[in-house]
Length: 435
Ligand code: S3P
Figure 1 (cartoon, rainbow, N blue to C red):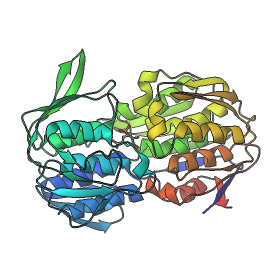
Figure 2: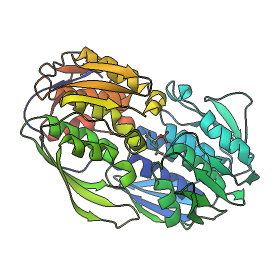
Figure 3: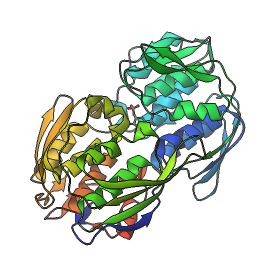
């Protein structure tokens, strides 16, 4: 469905965005690997996570939905041989984490995904998992392929990329590998797997290498746990951005995950001059949570340090939109990973911003945006999203503050991460309608 966003009234109110996608995937996967029952409250019921729920069933767990966002997973303590192909849809996280987990067991599983996931690099998990002893169909570095697991040996793996998906795949395999498994990455990526493994009773700790701490896991059995999923900061980012750039807005977000390894976008907004405050911080579940209050702000361009990229990797599309409404230049570097997301997000954002009258330029590992100021963005374009949910949401937000409406060519895929996005934004005053 095509959607159109118009500038209109302010973004105001209090809202609780859907549950965190990363934590939702992990709760289902660890629940399926564990013995006993895992109870999950606040699960994100987006398509990506539902793929993981279906996969958990295919690997032998009993997965049930007993209420809105409330699920139980009864695991058997191991992954069993699946009968059919494990279809991960659009989700890189589902694919890479499940591949890693599956290699720990003497099973063969065929993994596949949609046309976007079939283009995404899988050599980044094939390489370390092969070193541990897993076998893959010869030569293939993209889905579909068959994974043959069992009899793994722990490794010390120096990942060339900071990727929580790679790290998690290796750590999950390490649960069933002989000896210890250590994952070293250039900058620390989101640590939800490490935190949740602790909650499930795994033998996980940290070791120091090259002056930084890195996770280490030893063979472990997991026990079912109770997991609460806070609001996803990566989904919140779209509503927060709208409140910043639409005049006279004030938005309160309840119950947001504030894990520091996920807050690079908000750290960058603070440097741009955003009026945002975190309130009522607490840490009830092994992950920190807070309320966030955002008000319309006068923003200036920034150059976020490249080492911050892993903590804001999913927020670069919406950051590029916010930068268009700032005064001055925003220079994003050290974000080459954007090229291997659901689409090449560097190209998609540069093309879309230019179509909306914003001066943007591609870099090999990022982009440069010349801020047009609060009233300077024309909009008035029909945006090609290439099936990318975050590109679609970013340009709808742009349309809420541009002089002319913005249309996105497709919106169904928004459900992969933020089901009900348009209705959520409308309830806060946004003018988003079918085009
Ligand atoms: C995720 C890790 C990130 C992120 C993705 C979710 C995760 O990917 O982009 O949306 O849950 O581990 P990479 O690890 O590939 O950077």
